[in-house]
Structure formats: structure tokens, C-alpha cells
Image 1 (cartoon, rainbow, N blue to C red):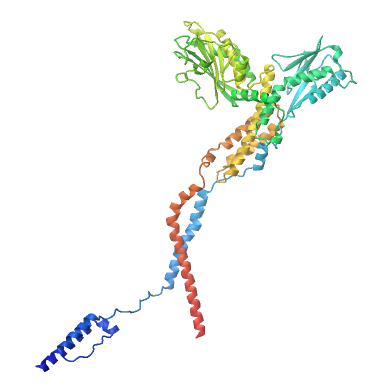
Image 2 (spheres, rainbow, N blue to C red; image 1 turned 180 degrees about the vertical axis):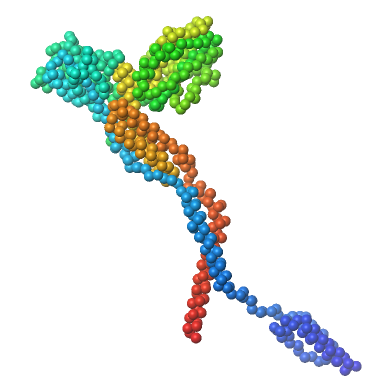
Length: 590
């Protein structure tokens, strides 16, 4: 029995060994399981089984298999792929991006532009020619009087922008007592008389001066009362023009050393109010004549005949400076904003019923000047005052039937019977004369002197104004291009600047003549077009910070893989070079 038991135990141990060996061949090959020999007893078998269960075999620790080395062809293929991506980006993508996003900036003469804006390129000077007719004097006496008058005039003139140059009118140009006035600002006609006096001709630029015979200076005299009197009259005649031009220069963009001094604050305030009341310069104005009534009559008027008779002469004289287009309209049942028969000054601002009256028609791009005739029985209850007319905002005219609205036009109250269906041209005489006066005021015409002299003065004032405005616009454009390096400057802007500078030079050389006004108009229009170029305005409000928000979402997903792939390829290339170098050194050492 014991022998049988021992045999069974041995068989059991052999079975266990075989089971372990057959079930875990890998473990047996990597680790050795040590079984301590026991006596062939049942107890030993139990302990052995327990030992196997408590002490399992340790895990395998075999070395990780390395991937097979890359073939040189695979390495070259990967390098070519990465290189092709970068070649596409550098040779195709970047040029397209550069071409489509480059901001065109034409070259501008910034220094010349700033010189014009600072007043360094041109000092506006108006050389006015004054012709003297002295038919009753001998040639030597006339020359001596002219010399003394010029000397006295130079002593009185404290404005360097105005150069009054006297010249003796040639006898050959005198026909029937009148002289040729081409390119002459004023003609002085000297006539003997009992006293010394002067008067401007109402319809011509002529100053009539009478003098007693004993006031003619001798050839050896260094001064003359007649010469001083003529010089004083000339200075007073052009005083308003000098003040306006001096005001324009003092308010321009020129540097302080290029601005005139000496203009009083009272004169500057008066000119500033008049400038505020005047319309901004335009080569063409549209005149709208409107007849309004709060009832069914009058329903027609002879406005065309009235304009031709009473207003057309003044418009023709203004032709060299401005062009005018005209339209008319009649509006029935147009109730005014104030129904009171007697209007106070406060009622005038609310009289126009802008919600129902068709005003300021959009005809072309010219500014509109409105002239309204309201047929009814309303009047203005305030007496006209010169102070109100000077202050400007709602100036009551001397007729007490009209008032001027700054930068807009005029309203005239025409008293008519309610049953009269037609307004004749004779009834429109006073309204048209009032409209003419107010139009001259809206255009900035000087208030003193005869009409031809006032219009020639207006031409010179407009020339100076346009020249200064064009110069200021050039300076603004130059500062804008320097302040915004990313703004687009198309070639049309450079061409406009070149045109402006060329005509500014011509205008500066011919100030005081009709050619000067023409060149100044062209220069101002070209400067305005260049400054307000549409392609430039769109770039004013696009700062560079906005480009980050545009490019990051586009370039981030594309750029990161490209950059990382390139860096990895460079690192692998360096590693291969290092391994090759190490292998070469090892081979040399062997």
C-alpha cells in the first residue's frame, strides 16, 4: 500500500511537470521553475502544488523589435514631397498672395506738396495796374504827377500782397474820353475843376478825379497834395479787397511767418461773418425761382421775361467767374409755416414750410440757390436795420418784404390781390432786383464800389481763395499719406497732384488776371478729386490689427503641418549625417 501511494505521488508529480511544461513552453524557455524534490508523500505533493500557485513564473523581458531601416528611396521620396509643398508655397503661393494683397502706392512729391501747404512755394501777390488819363496835362506834368502819386501810394500800402502800379494812359488808346481797360483794374480820369473831389463811375471801373489848376505839382517838387489825394482814394477803393485777401491768407494753412499781420480783430470778425454767410465756391450754381401761394391764384407769372430784363445783365457779368443754370416752378395751396399777417423776426425762421414746399431740386451736382416769391398779404413787422444785415443769420432787407437766408437763398413777400391769376413782369421788378443783390452777397462779392469793380475784385478774391484751398488740400493729402503707410495711392491720385501743382504755379504767376482764376479753378478741382479718391477712402478705416484676424484662421491649419514636417525632416537629415559620421570613424578605428 505505501508503495502504491508513492508511485501515485510520483506519477502525479510527473503529470504536473508535464502539464506546466506543455502548457507554458514559452515560460519554460525564458525562466526556470525549480521544484525542490520531496519525499513521495501526499503532503509533499500538496506543498508543491501550493508553491506553484503562490510563486508564478515572472513575465517575459524580451527586447522590443526595431522597425526595419528605411530604404534610401523612401527617404528621398519623403524629402521630395516636403520640398514640393514648400516650393509650391514659395514659388506660387507667395507671389499670388503678394500680387493680390499689395497696396499700390504711387510716388507723390511730398516735399513740394508741403511747401505749397506751408506757403513757401507761392506768395500771393496781385499786381494791379492803374491807368491814369490826364488829357489836360502836359506829358512832363503827367509823368511827374504819376511819379509822386506812386511814391505816396507805396508809403500808404502796408499789405505786401497788393501792388498797385500806376501807368500813364497812352493818348493813342484814348477815344472820345474813354480808355481801353484791358488788364487794367481801374482807370483814373483827371479833369480840371474848382475843387479836389473823386467819384466812382456806377457802371464802369473808372474813378473820376477833379482838381484845381493850381494843384498840379512842379517838376522840382518832391510832394503834392493832389498826388496824396489820389493815393488816398486808391487805397480806400481797394481797402476791402486788401482786407479780404489778408483774412484769407491769415486763416490758411501757411506757417505763421508766411501769414500777413496787421488785420484788426473787428475787420476779421466782419469778414468771417460774411464768409460764413456766403456760399462755398463752385464753378456752377443752379438758381431755382419759385412762386408760392396759399390759394388757387396766382397760377402763372412772367418770370422768364423778368429774369432777362432785371437779372440777366448781372449774371452775364458774373459769367467769367461762375456759370448759372435756371429753373422755375409754381406751387399752389402752399401754406406757409407761419400764418400771421405781420411777421416778426422770430417768425422768419419758421416761415418756410420745408415739409410741403418742393425746394432744392436735385439737378446735377451744382449747389442750388433758392429764390422764393410768396404771393399773399403778409409783411414783415420789423424796420430794416443795417446792423441786422451785417450780423447775417436772418437779415431783414431794406424793403421789409424780404430776408436773406445764409448759404440758401432769399424769400420775398409779394403783396397781391387774392383774385389776380397772373403776375406780370413789371410786378417782379423789385423781387428780381432784390434777388440780384442777395445773389451777389451769397457769392461773397464786396459791398463797396461800382458793380464792375466789385466783380473784378470778386475774381481776384476767388483766385486767392481757390489757390489757398488747393494748397491746403495738397498738404492734407501729404500728411494723410505719411500718417497711413498702408493706404492705397493709385496712379490717378499722383496724376491729380501733378496737375494741381502745375496749375498752381501758373495761377501764382498770373494772379490778378482772368487766366489766374482759370488755373486756380483747375488746380482746386484736381486737388479735390485726388483727395477724395474712392479707392483711398476704403482704406482709411482698416487698421493693421485686423489683418491678424484675417490671416490666422487661414494660415494656421496649413502652416503648422508644413513647418513641423520641415523641422522633422531637417532633424532626421542631421541624425543620418551624424550616424554616417560615427560609422565612418568606427570603421577607421578598426
